[in-house]
Every structure is written in structure tokens, then in C-alpha cells.
Length: 231
Image 1 (tube, rainbow, N blue to C red):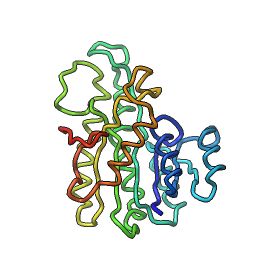
Image 2: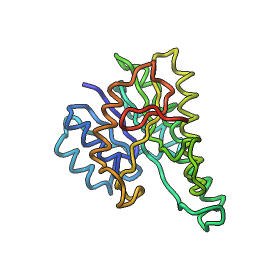
Image 3: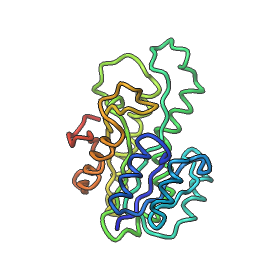
Image 4: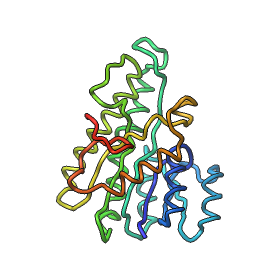
């Protein structure tokens, strides 16, 4: 039984990944900033009480990450860095493009996968198999894009891809695989109602990708359908 820790597990893609992991029989540690208000997670915990635990986890707070890591004793087989935020999709002069917004988006989407992986590395090292880190990124972070908007979000996801590549190089000697994933255009609060796929469809495809991740794929940027993407 694989043990999986998922950040941002209380809604959207994170909640769908958590739900699917539990139905698969995995042991899940669901991280979110406010467990007390995570109603859907609480229902899952009651239904899968032997396999589901909820921990308070703020990915932009080092002390929160340290407390969460210290509260665990079991090995981790898979860490899913899913927590993220968006901002407006306007151009250069969009009112949302302030330094404060850039700081928040870059810290959450780019820096937090690094700090989260570092915090839980001792538990990944205890895995009896191939330990894996999956960073949920976005096609909007690919340098191959031709768009002219969403500056902070695109930069943050490009940064997340770069962070994951660097982690994959450092952790290769410990046999820990790291990859980033585009989850598709998903119908969530962030993706909007016009997305191509549902959170459940995205989670199902992402799990196929997580399962097939090997050291050979470590450092890659992978689409939910299995295609390799350009960083």
C-alpha cells in the first residue's frame, strides 16, 4: 500500500487526487491550510478512516511545513505538490499585475514545491520502493507558449518546472524521481467552467502518469495524457 501526501487536498484537482487515491486503496495524508473548514475532506476521512488523515499544512509557511513533517512517522512513497494559486489573465497593464501579486504567486507556485519537498525528504528517503515527487504545473509555464498575458502565473509555473528539474538532478543519487505535470484544462475554480476535462478525469490520467514515473523520466515535464512537454 503506497503512502501519498497531497498538498492543497481540500478542493479542485487536489481533492480529486485524494479521492481517487483512497478508492485505489492507498494511504493518504491530505494537507490543507484549514482542516476545520475542509468539509469534503472530513467526509472522506470518515469514510476511509483507516487510510486517510488530514494535516494542517501551509506551503508558504516554513514552520507549518516543519510541524507537518515532524508529525509524521511513516515513509512517503509519493509527494504530490498540488497547492497553487492563480491571478488575473490580463496583459502588462492589467490591474492585478502588482508586485504584491507577483510575490504571492511566485512564492506559492514556484518556491513551495522546493520547500515542501525539502521538508518531507526524510520521509521520502524511507520509502521501500522508488520514491516520487509530482509537481502539478501547467502548460502555461512552457517556454513554447505564444501568449501575451498572465505574466505572474506563467512565470510561476515556468519556475516550478525549473525547480523540479533541479530537484531531479540533486535527488537522482538518492533514487527519488521528480517530474512536473500539466493536469489539463480542468473545470475548477481556477480553471473556470469551460475547461476540457473534469477534476476526476484529470486525476485518473495523472495517476496513470504517477504510476509509470521512473528515474528515466525524472526531470521531465509531462502532459496528463502521457506526452512529453517542452519546458
